[in-house]
Amino acid sequence: MPRWVETTTRVRWHEVDSQGVVYYGNYLHWCDLGREALAEAIGLEYTAVEVMTVEFRLRYRRPARYGDEVLIRTTMDWPRAARFVFRYEIYRKLGRELLAEGYSVHILLTRHGLRLGLDPYLHDKFVAFLGAPRGAEQTT
Image (cartoon, rainbow, N blue to C red; front, side):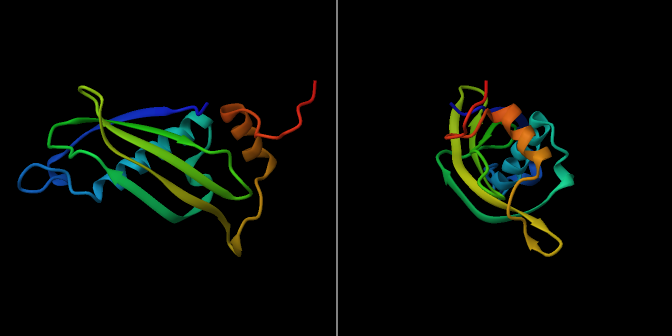
């Protein structure tokens, strides 16, 4: 069962069009807030690793409007090598109405390109938050 982290934000005036509806690109910023909250919950310093976004997909269900309080739920799949998949659900907090859902894929980088695996520090943080990866042998 995935472990979700929740954070909230309020729709600000600069995020909406003349009808008070949130411009679709702002949902990506809210996903960033969700990833930051997830990193904090895991105990990672968000700026300690260099990450590149390689894919982003959102499905919009309902519009958010000026003044809405928005709930952002974020989880992640168990990292594979240096590839991370984050999953998002964005709700209008009042009534818990689903506004958007989606995922993003990110890879870890070094100065010389792609990092091929997780160092023990990151691995241990993910195990503590997500549990052991599927198929991992457990020691007793």
